[in-house]
Image 1 (cartoon, rainbow, N blue to C red):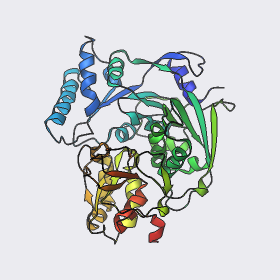
Image 2: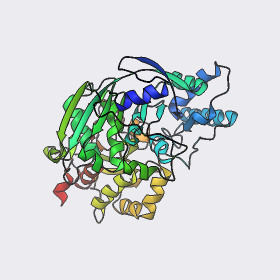
Image 3: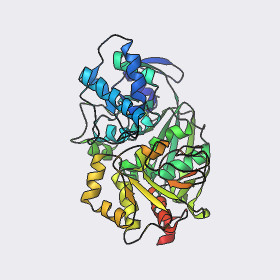
Image 4: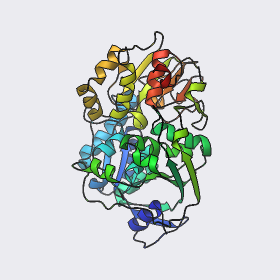
Length: 416
């Protein structure tokens, strides 16, 4: 009676059945590294004195794109050199790429039943399409480049059942924030989080990605949603190669089960300095200096549409800056075609090309001491987006846009 995680790890390791706690060595479909994690991976790989498994490797510079200083330029140069030396086809140069997790999904590397690893903690995003995906270290990534396999401790699985119709301006971000607010940032430590229920079925692929993206913020090894027709429709004409969807057994055994009523959820904010510090946006009246819309959590076209709907005909409040960062070139182009970029610029928001940038406190929106930012990103740790004395409040795109308009953290329903 295996779960999705157990089935995928079992199949990819050649075992008929695996159980939580088993150690398996499994065949990897793809390994991804970015500009930050790539350089140490390449240095370790050199020691193996072998050729890489080119077809399994995906190289995506995104954290400091375009490069902000000499150090980041050297990181990017190392990735460019590795790609050129070994003729890696799946390399996404500046100008045709974007945030790594968005690209992995957009470009068809992710599919149901696949086992994917990435040298970035938010690799768990890919579970939105029914894959088992998890973050690894650069040394492990180097090993996968050489061997195509990696060992795993099969995780226990939790089942999260969310039913009911979400209210206006309640998005996938609010669902995962409410779950993390309930179980805490260690509530899924080294567990696979499976998300089920009528609410999940009704969500767009974008909202599903927001949920699985933040599984790591609960300590999860993976976050997985079983594939359905929405996933299959998304993959048509996009996915690379063949794949076999995996579903949990009807009597699958879970270490824990949690049930939620989505109709009770409201636009939610996570206060500093942990994603578990959740409150309804309506209960906060915190003045902000910056509103940030983007990242692998909420930088998709659906997120930009929600924000643009609120900003159309309005302006960012004087004294507040809003930064909009589409997650990929494709998202940027679509936003241009739909007139969203014009709406943001007319509202006095700053629109950037795709980059991780300020999400990790890198650049393009770093915070000074004492500054407050409401952000659609995934972490609000001390110093996450800049100075250790700055504060980050996590929220969905609608809350970010509404707050930019009012200059304080705002439930978007207040603007109706």
